[in-house]
Length: 238
Image (cartoon, rainbow, N blue to C red; front, side):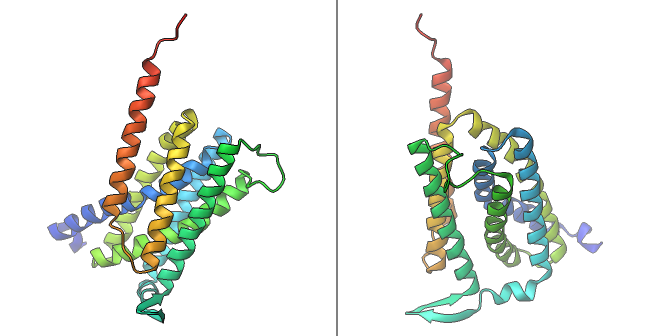
């Protein structure tokens, strides 16, 4: 209870909540792209399950602080770069995003039908499985950041819950927007490619400041929004 009367605890909670929301942008984009291809009722349920699992993963990881800190400990070295479990997880997650986004872009350009055999299906179970995989990757990076920013587990848990609530509220409108404006899906997939490259770079020891990535995403989204606004104002020629 002493944390409630500690101004530093409130400042830490606010800062960490904002950071967790920013780090959750990647997760929101990924979930929105996947669920946009499901029927509306299944899309909502997939978002609920996906973000619910993300919250569970993060809280479990917070309860395993010693294990999580150990993920940053070097296992072996490649040249001058020490490789940890965190690096391996980030590399695997980045590679998964690159493959997934590339397949989705190829499918969008080629216009392949969902019913074709061998295609990456947008079935409910497939979407949930992919969300679980990427949730685990983003959870590790998110919680390691939380450990470095806050001292109390209680603050970390509350910040994660606040971030998940904001992500859930934002995921629905973002998914609906992507579904309504198909061109934005290609933009979102490009974001996933960028995020995948950033994760692989982090795993290799080349940190790309997230501010650069989020600025590029915000700028591109702003340009696309202007394009959509301009198209909506055009009057059809009789």
